[in-house]
Image (tube, rainbow, N blue to C red; front, side, top):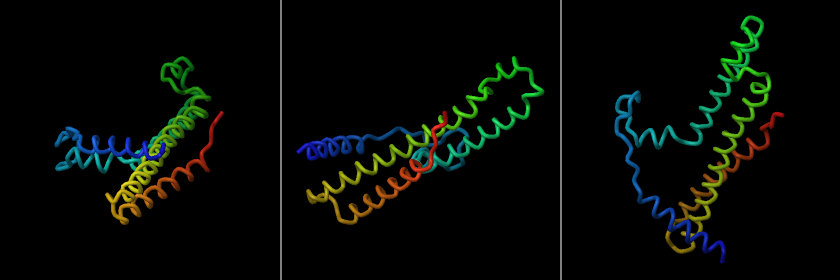
Length: 160
């Protein structure tokens, strides 16, 4: 019964939010010519793109860590303090933990969204409101998100 009530709430919520339309600017400053707001919303702001960007940020932080280490003997400590984030514990513990927190959250949210969507499509199928193909597509997306999160979970490290 509880699952049934949750399904009804999800259907009501998703039907309301699906009808809501964001006011996305057509031309964004600095964007590629002809690339509209909806294209950026749908292609650039995805979990896969966010994780890819985060991987690049991690590489940049590693470069900053190496640069900090190389310059310790030549840059005075007071200047290092003004620059900030040059302490060893921040660079060895913070950088990795911060990135893992963001990456884990993105992948967890994607997993939960795909799980809820799969549950919803199954319920809609039971009600005769969805086709078997929709169920299979939702299941495939859920399994893919589950694998991505599990891979992250099995390989991430908490630095302390």
